[in-house]
Length: 96
Image (tube, rainbow, N blue to C red; front, side, top):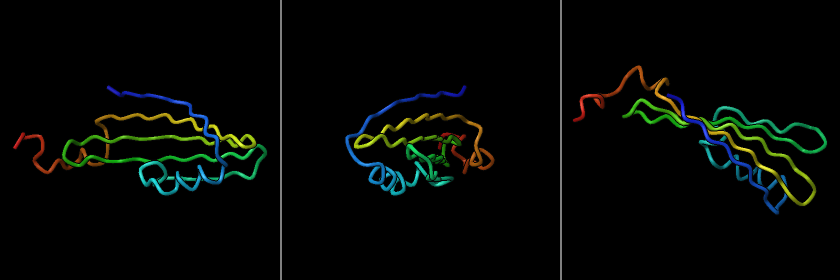
């Protein structure tokens, strides 16, 4: 079963500050981060965190849209069992 959640947040800060914060959170942007040269300013990020002992992962897809002095951030997060670490569970499935 795949669980997914989404959220929309409006920040009263600049687009550049939000993108810089996104870069610093490894799980939010460790796979892909692209700032497009468009108007309005847009950034797209994809990140993933793997949990080796349980064989699960959490993926986050984020869009950032700069609208003047405000910045809109949309995040969709999903997790499931089917991930790379599921190939090797380090005996976590034994419950020891």
